[in-house]
Structure formats: C-alpha cells, structure tokens
Length: 400
Ligand code: FES
Ligand SMILES: [Fe+2]
Figure 1 (cartoon, rainbow, N blue to C red):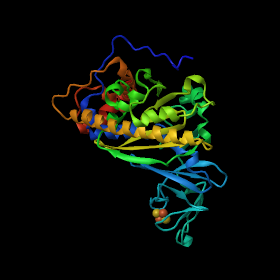
Figure 2: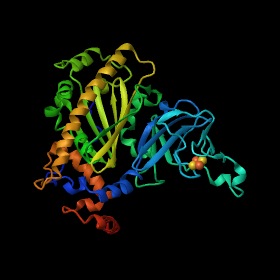
Figure 3: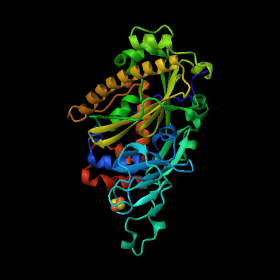
Figure 4: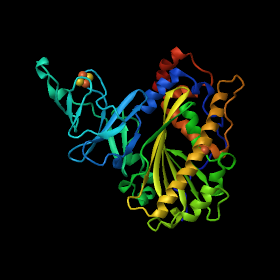
C-alpha cells in the first residue's frame, strides 16, 4: 500500500524565507500568538487513561491560563478553568491527583461537585444573596478523540471540532486502539531556552535527520518523508530498516520489536508523526502512541510537555521495544534542543537574513502560512513598533 495519505504538490516557486526574525523575539507578537493561536485553538491536555476513576483530575498551566480536567461520578470527563469563583484561587494545586467526592478550594473552602457545580460556600450565611447556580466552575470546550483529551481555553474558535479536524488521519490512527491504552511513565514537562516557533520549526522537517540525528538515521534513514500542513494537520512517515543497528538502542529495538499483527502491513514497522496546528504532535509506533507539544513561557523560553501510552496487555517484547524507542526519542529530542538554540539565537544578530528553505522543509513553510493567516502582521519583513503591533494586526485582519 502507498504509505502516503495525501499527495501535496510542492509549488515550483515558493517564498523560502520563513517568518521574519523579529517575530521570534517580540513580546507584543507573543501576546498576539496567545490571543489568536493558543487560547482559541485545540490543545491536548492528556488522555482519558490519565484520569481513569471518578474524582481523578489533571491540570495544565499554560500561556497564563489554568485548565482542570476532572472525571465525574457519572464517568464523564469535563474541563474547567482551574479558578475558584470566590477569589480566583486554584481549586486544585497538583498537576495530577484524585479529589474523592468534591473539589475543595484551598483558600476559603468553597466546595464544588465533580461536575463543576458549586455545592456551597464556606460560612454560607456570610453571603446572604449568593445564587449557587451562577457560581459553578467555568467550563472549557472539551472533546475526546481516540482517547486523547482536547481542550480549548476560549469557547469557539477558528478550527472545526476535533473529530472534523483530524478526519484525514482517523482511519490510519484508529488501527492503534489508542482509546484503550494506559500511561507509560506519566505526563512529562521540560523547559527549553528558545522561542516556541524555533522548537516547531525543527520538528516540522526531516531534512536535518541525516545530519543531526544519527540514531533516527540509522533506524529509518531514507524512508522518511513529510506531508506538509493542510487544514491544520501534517503527517510524517518512516519505516525502520530491519538491518539497522550501528547504535545500541537501534540495534536492539530492531531486534526486539515484535511483529504487531493488529496493524496493516505498511504500518508494522512504521513511525508516524501527525502535526496538529499550532503546537502539537501525535505520534504512533508499533508499540506505543504519544503526544508532545510546546507552549511559550516567554519569547525566549518554552515549555515542552508530552506523554507516552502503551497497550494495556503488552508483551515483554513490546515493553522492551517501548523503552528502546523512548531512548531513541530522548536522544533525538536533546539533539533538537541544541539545533533550535543555534537557529533561534541567530535571529538576534544583525546579520540574520531569514531562512532559505529546501523543498524538504516545505512543512515549515506551511506551518508558517497557517500562522500568517491568524496573525497577518507576520507578513511584515520589518518589525513594527511593539506598541503598534496589536492595532496593526487588527487592521490587517479586518482587511483579509
Ligand atoms: S478563593 Fe476559593 S474559597 Fe476563596
Ligand atoms: Fe529533529
């Protein structure tokens, strides 16, 4: 079977420069990104198996917003702002846990039911007019797709439902039964000292694999190809080489990884990455499924976050393969961190004249195009004044 999902023609003549360098260091632009790209686009919060029981919760603090995902007594997974309606405290403090029967605010003790409704204020007689029905936790848009929990901080947004958005990859992704998976090692986070777009730019192309990722090159080398972003979704595909193995982890992975009978032939040795605009990737390997994503902490610092999920009834060989693919991935990630640092810091130099992208980096271009559509000020080669950024962008948006 043809391993391509979509055949996207690369134009003969395209602008290879990438986003302007100033956009990687502008605080005013970062506010536009939060407004037009992060708050109103779908974000992966985790997987339903991270919160299997009633009262289990997870939280996600990103871009100045706080999400709380909690499973109700009815088994339903709901999303809220992790913000008490009394004076705004966090309702839960930890990144993951179980809250038994109710969410009790640690500040003054207001109590919320697991479905977000307010059960009651502490010392209720001190609020003679409190209408409890008006003070439930504020809900977030939430959709579960193949087990993955997607939330949106602002209700509504430029994207369709997650089911609609990810329809192009659904038939392929469905082979992995991701909804039935369980956590491997939990949700991880890590900081990296670059603009979030530099992280994404590195991840959106495989041109650098041969030079910069010896283990990946050993594993799948020339079989790798990218399908660029179309309507918010990209895909990269590679199959590992059964004869690979100059590196310890690769040699053993290729030797140990069992033949996954539940997958169609063309996926049995495949590593596939699905990019989801603006900042996330779902990736599948024969023995595991994972997500990773990035959120800006400032113009020059980014939070990386992700998790790996495994089959509930995995064999010892699958478990070993999962550990080895994790090792290969971990090395790859630290190599990418270094590359993104070098690329990102150049944008502060007077000598930086923009990218000059290869046809093999067309995925970077299409991601930038998606960003430009939301934030047209990114089309300006010269940095606008920081104080004018917001109004200028609004004016350009209303023109398009
Ligand atoms: S802020 Fe939550 S009870 Fe006061
Ligand atoms: Fe990389």
